Length: 444
Ligand SMILES: NC(=O)C1=CN([C@@H]2O[C@H](COP(=O)(O)OP(=O)(O)OC[C@H]3O[C@@H](n4cnc5c(N)ncnc54)[C@H](O)[C@@H]3O)[C@@H](O)[C@H]2O)C=CC1
Ligand SMILES: O=C(O)CCC(=O)C(=O)O
Image (cartoon, rainbow, N blue to C red):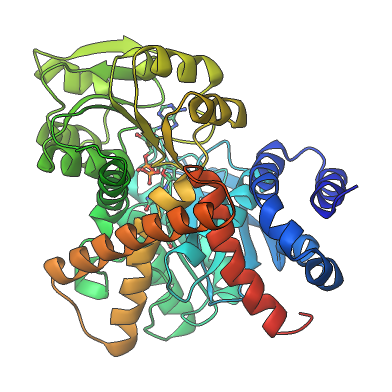
């Protein structure tokens, strides 16, 4: 049995009942076969695959807090510090009722490769809680965040582990978390990114994941003889990533006709009105029915269905495993030319394979959504030098980073005979840098 298959078997046995984590590991290890075969003796001796699939540490803790009725509630908190070979652990915090160890581990594992691809010195980690922010008052959100940080502060720091936002964690939550960290530790440091602009945040971090996704997609299309201007795009999600992906797509001359949330979706053939979407989702934190109520050209549908709409480019920006095999078939039947992931692992393994086999340009999230964490690393740099850069400066660095990521993974895919397979290219390029650092640092 080859080294990759041996490790896949061991990882499956050790992590039974963790389907999302095993899905992420399978995708990565399967695509690393050419580079592993080329270095098998060294990698086996150094046990690099066993080490890279085992988190440095997994922290789980109780998060008690008091709701508005005076009732004590208890949630579970997580921080998985996956790998710090190339820099301090870095990755978001997710607040969603579905959060469990498998989900946080898959996200932390993906983050290791993504952060490596940015070319910036950041390791990989992820955290969160099964706390559901929906319907909670500001006071309840603050109570939860303060309690969460009262345990988490022991394990994080500007040179140790720097969390940020993810699903359910935006500027409000980062503010409460930062305030509690400062209060307990008594130090003013860049321990979190995505901070408000008055206390160490970076301009363009809010926009970065969505904008970065479009910079990457534009470059991928350009390299394949296509122009993003004039394309029809379907987006899923209606959160941070989706909103700024839609905005940048429109700035680049494309038309985005869909978005969605966890209860329904919008088809707006005239193009999504971003100002209205921002008001509904960022200001009112309301459902998409409010968007439809104010926009005569929009149709609202319950459930899921974004991928049934004819488009040239699909950008899944909501959550993991939201683009299934039947969705991939519908997209291909409707002539899609590119799928670029804004969310983390939104496309199932089966759907990815189908898209690639049918000639669709497919960009994995660890490459195409890396603009968020890359800009977080730029926020860390600004915090270290105690300066703030202009929006244009950050945005232009972000664009360069995304264009370079595309070319690095394109080159890596060609080097190992996998031209056009951007999944393999991203995994190989991200992996090589981390593994070289791990080997150089000895057994640790
Ligand atoms: N915020 C960031 O900087 C980054 C986020 N990501 C990933 O992007 C995705 C979205 O994250 P954010 O936009 O930050 O979160 P968010 O909390 O701002 O928005 C998530 C959106 O997705 C919708 N959603 C959730 N589950 C859904 C489902 N089953 N079907 C349809 N819609 C659903 C929610 O209603 C919400 O509109 C996640 O996979 C996250 O891990 C990736 C890189 C960076
Ligand atoms: O900005 C960050 O540190 C993390 C963003 C994130 O969670 C992600 O890239 O999935």
